[in-house]
Amino acid sequence: MPNYDFGGVSYPQNNTQEPIPPGIYPATCVKCEQAWNQDGIEQWKITMEITDPRYLGRRAWDTMSWGSIKSEKANGHSLSRCKLILSRLGGLNMDDPGEKAYNPSQLLGKSCHIELEQVDQDWKTGAKLERPTSRITFAGYMTQEEAEPASKLKGEATPF
Image (cartoon, rainbow, N blue to C red; front, side, top):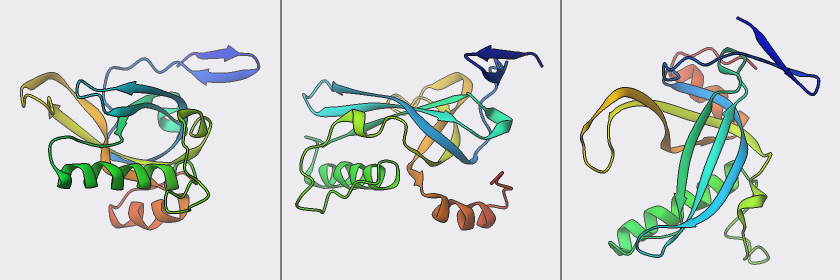
């Protein structure tokens, strides 16, 4: 497999269209943008780049929503997920009274482990996708300390 050299950093050419197998992988946030959904709720569009040598440079995308107008329960789930992502990826604590303002740039360059699952249906419509894709699970952000036992429970070998 040929390698590409960008500024002294060599990356393997990995343009396979196969989804990354389900599992837990080290990754770094390379992009995080603020957006709003159709209901006017703030969202962050997160791009995670896999740093595992087997899938180096492959990416997984996620959307972190800061709330929901559908129900109080859904709103609570959204905020719980925000807390999880901010703490495990960004090292931020939403319960800390000193930390009240957050912005997407706080996640850039931060690393953690992500859990990927393979899906073959559109999450909104339930329609079958042309080809399976990898998706970060709902609570799929972990520190390295959390990832090691989780990988062992799932019978995976982690390269760290």
